[in-house]
Amino acid sequence: MPVVEAMEMGKPVLCSQGTSLPEVAGEAALYFDPRKPDSILQAMEQVTANGPLIDQLIHQGRRRSQRYTDTKKMAEEYLAVFQEVLK
Image (spheres, rainbow, N blue to C red):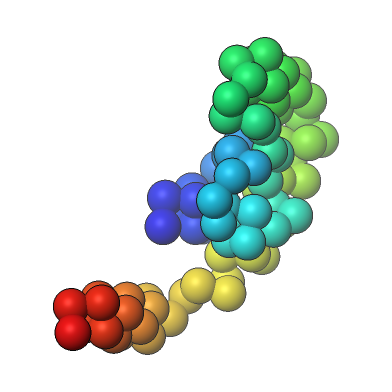
């Protein structure tokens, strides 16, 4: 959820290539390898020094976050998953 929240708030998103983050953020994020500090630093430098990239990430992020606007439905789906796991 933090990735979607950041996109919705108009913040450029940098995130790990791992887990499900690429599925959530899609083309609306700048990715880094979390096991390589230089990769993280490079992503941070890239986003702070490149105004057009920032604008692009913000625009794509706002569009991407629209996929997750039905928060009630999302909460119900999470609850269903948790209930299934507890069975």
